[in-house]
Length: 117
Length: 115
View 1 (cartoon, chains in turn purple, blue):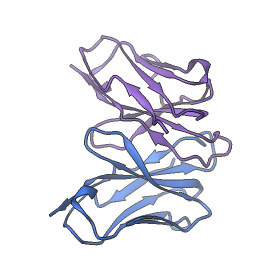
View 2 (cartoon, rainbow over the protein chains, first blue to last red):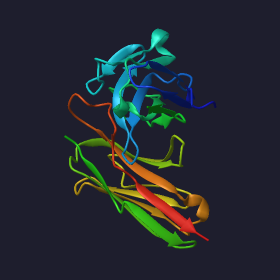
View 3 (cartoon, each protein chain N blue to C red):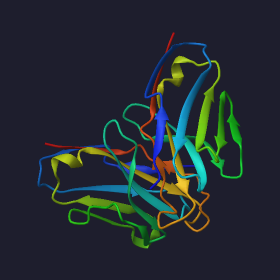
View 4 (spheres, chains in turn orange, purple):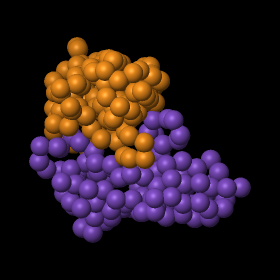
């Protein structure tokens, strides 16, 4: 079974530029998550989708971050304009179960490492 | 708000030792707790998932226990090997509130097993 795919693996940009990350979850997984992991910290949820609807985006800095999940499969996370503090690894994860069932195991991709200069 | 703490932050041991990594959480109303492994520059690999109704889960040399009432979980690694060197993260999923689907992570325990 193929895992969660993410691209690009690495990206270096200057502040105020824009960047986009792509995620393809495990086939059939209804729930998709984007997490931000700053060096030395645990991951923090940015946004959670169930199919193509947003379930939780309360921790997403909406003035600069946006995300979409068209057709309930692939997802993109965009940052525009980027700030120095956005330097982090952006992790995509998916789970089979719906939020309501709450019991699903999360599977993570390799992550996209962003460096903002 | 749920807070997750992992102790110790770092651990360095010789090969062959049995290890215990600790995780504590402040709100016992959880659906499940999941242990992950993270290698440098990599994503997270799921090790064990314990549902709130369970007391422990085992996979190979790994055993994870859950004591929901005291807000604690331990990950036991038997006969450690250099290949076990990685950061180990625990995460809990809350049972109530607007953050039902959100995992709360600890900062992790960085493990080094030397030959």
